[in-house]
Length: 289
Image 1 (spheres, one colour):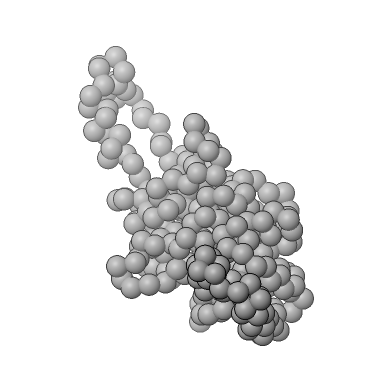
Image 2 (spheres, helix red, strand yellow; image 1 turned 45 degrees about the vertical axis):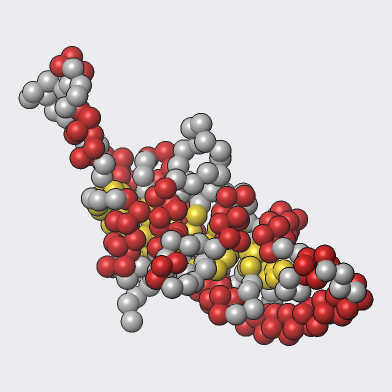
């Protein structure tokens, strides 16, 4: 068994790199954890662009060229000086694919990504690289939103009543051990809306809801026993809106969600609930494959 965990920190630019690395340090549970700081080079694209520049915009021959990765080296060296086990590497290729492949090759336990700078986009809008990582990673992915000044204190776990919920519980135990989590599950009668539209008696629907809730209570109790100190929140409604409302109401600082698992053809699918939360929830998101 390897000593400690391996955390890949995917960084694109200096402005957001420190956010991602800071979050990776907060997820660390051992002084033996190793942090792989990775950046995917876009210099090939820049070289093509530079060829189109007029002579007055080009760097004269013989003049020293600035190191485009000086910020990456500086960030890595600063982390080492603080006592962390950090290495840095510049990868080549399509960013999302290269980062996921690197994580697979080194047996990473977690990937941390930060959103791109705001620019003209919405604050929570993710870039294509982050989405590719979320869709194809075989290990959990943490999406860092912005700077935080303290460790996580109130995680919210979105619990499905199947193997996805089990994976979420396992990830919480591995990365958020010791924190008292809120466990939320949204329940509904299958095709509940259609039943009402077809004139199904309301008292019969209420009875069905009672049965569905009782089944959910039983399964959620099993999760609670595996996560000491956790609190169960059973809410009736659509999963997406319930998750977001509970996260905002409880002021959760990280939400743990399971990613949709399907066939090979579904590899690019995150899942409707997870995708809704990624785009709309202002907290950090830990997505579990």
